[in-house]
Every structure is written in C-alpha cells, then in structure tokens.
Image: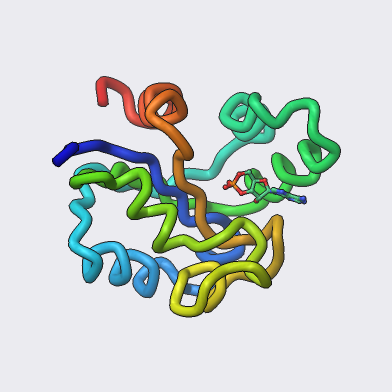
Length: 136
Ligand code: CMP
C-alpha cells in the first residue's frame, strides 16, 4: 500500500460546459480523497511554467493559450496509488483512444481539449502540487 498525492485539473473546456460536478463526483465515487480544491484563471505565463516540460512540442503554444482561456479547477487527490488510479479514471490523452467509462471518453472534446489533467509520475507530482498549492 502506497498513499500518494496527485494534482488534478479540470480544464477550461469542462468548466465551460458545467462538468465540474460530474468530474468531482467521479473522483469521490472512485474512493479518492480530495484534500485541496480551488478555482483559478491561469495567465499564459503560469500555463507555460506549468507545462514547461512540453515547451519544445509543436502544440505548446496552442495548449498554453487554451489552458489560459478560461477558469480551471485545481485539486490535490490523495489515496493508495492515486497517481495511477486518477490516470485510469481520466483515460488516454486522446478521447478517441480512451477506454469506455473514462472521463475523457465520456466528456472530452479532442486531444487538446481533453477536460482533465493528472500528474504522470511522483517527480511530476513534486513539481505540480507546490506549483499551485503553497505548502502542500
Ligand atoms: P495533459 O495530460 O494535461 O498533458 C499535456 C497536454 O497537452 C495534454 O493533456 C493535452 O491537453 C495536450 N496535448 C497532448 N498531445 C497533444 C497533441 N498531439 N495535440 C494537441 N494537444 C496535445
């Protein structure tokens, strides 16, 4: 058993379509604990800093413009193997490739407007949680 934390983001496409409750319900129903939660409107610079690991990718400018286009919800989740559990709940990056019953398969628009984010490793968690939650 490995109690972990991970960062979850409900992205602008999902907030705009009033899917916050739907997504938070899926998190709660799956048994994960939400230990911190807030809304935010990211500046382009904040989005660029957060996604710095993708700075060399062709989609970086589009991704960071999109992530700063409207409000998001930031959450810290906690539980056994929560990094992997949250990624399973989200589904594959591209909703067309995501398994049935996952958030992205059910709700996402496309590979960029994919409704949710989750840290992909303990190293990402160590960068991403304090990026948005001071002291966590
Ligand atoms: P996320 O899990 O937040 O990590 C990086 C994000 O970049 C990803 O979700 C998508 O929103 C976006 N992304 C990844 N691949 C592509 C792509 N090929 N084209 C556009 N956006 C992408």
